[in-house]
Every structure is written in C-alpha cells, then in structure tokens.
Length: 178
Length: 435
Image 1: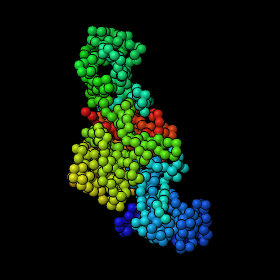
Image 2: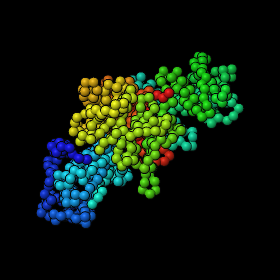
Image 3: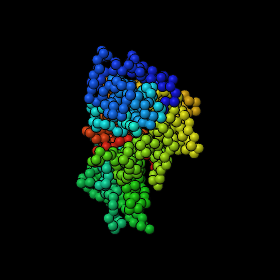
C-alpha cells in the first residue's frame, strides 16, 4: 500500500524503532555493514554470503540477480522492524524495481498464531508496509509495490512451537511482473 | 458471588450431536457442585409412525450439559409415565429426583404434530408447567430445545439459550496443498451443522446481526480481505465496499443500521462506522497505532476496541456521542478481542498475563469492580463469544494439533470441550436470541 505521507511514515518508523527498543534502525544502511544470512556480528569489513542470499555489488540488478536475493523476511514477535541482515537484499530489490519501471511486487505480510486474528491482520500489514517503505525509500515506485496482509491465516509452517512461530512471522516478496 | 455461580452453571453450550452428519460432539469435562436432579421421561409417541428425533433425549442433554442439572439415566427409571394419571411421585422420590418432565407427541390436523409436556415438582407433588407445542416432523429438535428452555427458565429463573445457534469457521487441508474453508451454522449444541459458505481462501470474523437475520464476515476469496454481508435465509450476500489494505472485524450496531469495521486506507488500521442505509463512512479513531476489533456496547452508545497506542494491545472504550476514550484493561501486557455481556457489565477478552510467556487465555473482567478472572487454562485460547444469556463463553482453542471449540461458564467453573471430527475449527460466534 502506498504511504500517503512521507513525514507520517518517518514518524511511524521512529515510533516503531522506539517501541522495539532498538537504538538505531536506518533504512539506508551502508550495505558493507550488513551481515550475510547466518551472520550476527557487526560490520568488520568482511561480508558473508549465505546460501539464500548474496550481496549485489553492481549498481545494476538483473532479473538473474534476483534469484540470489532473499524473498522472505522474518520478524520478531509483535514487531514490524526489518532485521539488519535483510537490508542489503531489500535494497537490491528496490534497485531492480527502480531500474525496471514495469516490474512490480506484492508484499504479503504474516503473523504467527499467537494472539488474536484481527490484531494479527494488522501486524501482518504493518510488517508488509515496513518492507514497502524500505523499498520505496530505496528507489522503488509507489505503484510498483503493493502490500497485503494475511495475518495468521496462511502459516508457512504448521505447528505450535517457537520454531514454527518464527517461520510464520514474515513478509513474502513476490514479483507480479519482472 | 452466588449470582455468578448461578450464571455460570446456567448455559447450555454443547450437546452430544445425535445426527451422524454433525461435525461437533460435546463432552462435559467438569461438573458443578450439587446439580439439581431432574428426570426427563421418554415422551410417548401417539402419532402412529416413527419419529426422527428422541425429544426427551434432546431435552435431557440440554439440561445435563448446562451443568445445572443431573439428569436420570433411563435404565434406572422405575416407570415411564406420559400423562399425569400414570405418574406416581413415589417412583421419583425413591430415585431422589427433585423434578420430573413427562410428555407425549400426537398428530394434529394438516400433517402437524403436537407435543404436550409437563414439569412436576416431585417433593411437593405439584405441576409447575403444562404446555402444548406444535411442530412438524422436521422441527422436532426445535420443539425439544423450546421445552428445555421452558424447564430451564422455570427452575433457574434465567432465560434459556438452547434454541440459539452458533457459526464457526472450519479449515481443512486437502491433499494437494490446497485448503477448504467453510463457514458453518449449527445449533448451539453442534447439531444440524450446515455450510453457508465454502471457499478455497480463508474466512474470518463472522458476526451476527442483532436480529439474527444476517452475518457479516471477512473473506479472502478475491485475493484480498473484504467484508461481506450474507442473509441467512436466502444465502444472498453483498460485498461491502472494500478499500486497499485491511477490511476487517465487522461488528453490527444493536439497531442493525451500522457496521463498525477496520480499514487501513488512511495509512494504518483505524475503526470506521459504515451507515448501511446511506453508505456513508465515518472514521472514529485517529492514531498511528493499530486500532482494531471493535465491539458494540449493548446500548449502542459506545464501542470497545483493541489498540496498541500504549505500546501493547489493550482494550479501550470510545463513547460515540462525546468521543471520550477510556482505557478498560490494565492487568497484563496483552488484552484484545473484547466482547461484552448483554448487560454491559462483563468484558470477555483474550489475555496474556505478565508471567504468561506464550500463554493466551480467556479472561473476564467485571467492569463494575475491575476484577479480572482468567477462565481458561489451555494457554492457547482465542475468539471468545458470549451466549445471549451471558452465562457461558464459547471460544477456540487447540487440542493436540487441531483447532477445536470449547466453552466455559462466565466465572470459569464449568468447562465444556467440543472435539471435532475433521479439520480445524475456529472463530465461533454465538447468535442472539432467535425467533
């Protein structure tokens, strides 16, 4: 969904950051500081490459490159804050979109089963919109990104364990056209 | 507290389904102290042909499952009176019964049936009720629920809810990675379940109109959540105007003229009122937080809703005339999906207690005193819906890997479980009193 008003978006992002208790979350992090798929160490000049994602150095992102990028992004419980390690791939998606004006993506936001269903619809949407803002701020056009929430209605993993829950708190980025 | 005890034992939630087609079967899992002994004697069939229902069995189970009564097993009955002349009070006194119900079914003109029933006080040897109920062969079950209501009301002073209905959503996983979702309508006891909507996409948030004629619900059949209003009698439905983003949590005003609902068209989830006559939309909340799950106060003058404007989900009340906002819940760090009893006094909700970790249970708050009682113990309870006589709360929970429905008296003392035969069951919604 479109963010009608950028200052509102910034205010909301700031609020989410505050709520999450994070000290900083920037939507334009230097890609060199982002860790790879399994990484949890801060920037040390070394980049790791996970199986599910690579870092795209080149300015141009090709459709082939997209296959290297993550398309599912995970979140902490009751939070809609994009993880640091996802920023590089999302920026790459954004670059692809800005370079290919006829491309479009659908962001599908989800929540785990805990808590109430309609609140989880709102949480799923909040997550999708957090990713949408990131894409737009990094060059994607408003019209190229659509956010939709499925709440807890479409889990990726069935089960009642923290492991299952962690895999359901996600946003899926699905290209409608490339 | 005595009143609460009465209230809690009052409601009949779920019965053992008699029909093979019924999806829900009920088990009473916890008794109540000193239930009143009642014998419901098999009704005499004077119609000359077999009947599709064992009326006395339905009455018996309604009363038994309410938790308020202990009914007598047929094999222990010393006699089977169907009329006053055949009734010997001694037979029931020696069996320690306080009350006995007898009845008979006769044919009446134009292919109808007439059910006569009587309720007697065994100790005083006094008749308390005598009525004739007309029925058809296919509405015998309704006649039985009516009789159970009358007996219940006579003996408890509370309005019975045996003739009410529930709707709920089922989700089945079909072999090829597909799902089948159904919106089901059943008697309160799970009998006579019928599908009123079937879809390959999720269905959510069913809500009864206060006159019992319509349901609103959320369907994803277009690929996005949208709100529909469906007329139960005809099955006809219309899609309420949908907007980009969320369309959710429909709630009928008590007068049926407006729907409260949630839209995120203005940037984040907010509560709106849709006037169903003029189709005008009115925005009620104005906050960057999540505002969702509206429910009407029974007088129609305020709405309660869930908001995380304080950091985490809590329940608030918004006055519709003066737009005053009042926070209602302060106990615990997650309170959501509030529903009020018909007298507006008690608030049932999904509650996560501070030390609860991942435990979500149903809690009931007395809005007069502020006292909060947690009435479920499963740790995975959601979607509470309160019976129209306020004494029982039905909710969705998990049993093993499956979603099932369960119910609790308002104070948590009497628990009922409904094992389901297939799929996951969720999102129950209790009807209002029906004609």
